[in-house]
Length: 78
Image (cartoon, rainbow, N blue to C red; front, side, top):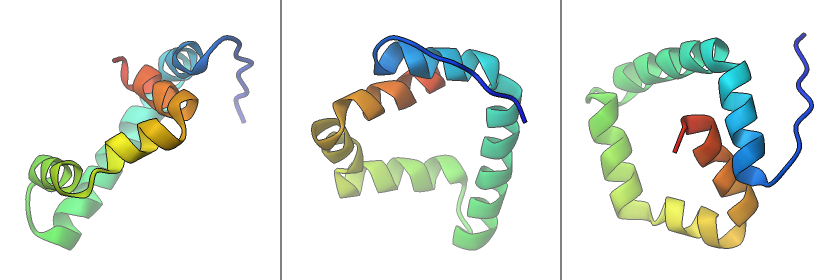
């Protein structure tokens, strides 16, 4: 098990996670997209776009937990 100590705000902690675990995160995202394509029978990018545009999920997450949202953006490299 790999452990990572992080400091700073959500964005800084997310960036550290994204950099340290890039390969693991990339592999997990690849498997998730494959499973999503099989389950939904549409391209994952289309599903994700439709989900985000129709649910307000990202805006709600940012409003309710801004530090966590910044951390996720940091992991993604935004």
